[in-house]
Image 1 (cartoon, helix red, strand yellow):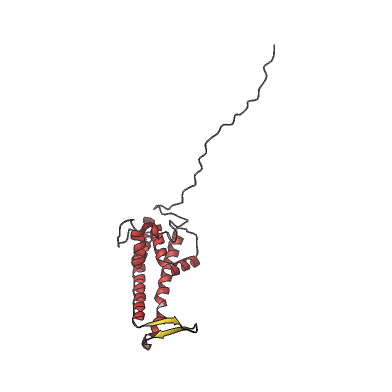
Image 2 (tube, helix red, strand yellow):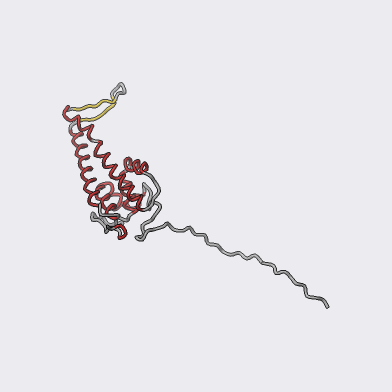
Length: 197
């Protein structure tokens, strides 16, 4: 009789479906995304009403709404930026009304024309409210960026705030969910619970 042969078991390859999924973004206790902006700097067009419109026509309200979501300083930011904005606009209107402006002459020189010599101070004073307003927005963006652990630095905040303040305001409002899409509301939403003092 023959002896049974000890056979080595052979594994048969079987295809196993693998589902690869990326982990979603981290969020805080309020569901706000951590580590990255919820929308890009030009993401304001994803919600024209009210976000884009509010940031363009009522930037002080948009800034106040965003800052009210992360602390009690919403009114302070709104009033400070509103006063700077109004002052800047009044200077711009008064300068135009006095026919004061810069122009390039035929020799290529930059020349200041002032119909009334008493209005010359306006041209030198006009940039200051805009500059201070940009600094205020830069500080607000830095506050939100630090609070939600978003990578970046003050240079990026400064450049964005100076060259596209409306986009920065819309980005901050979107990130902290300071508005309800499709509803134009000038009031502040409640401060996020983990940020109340």
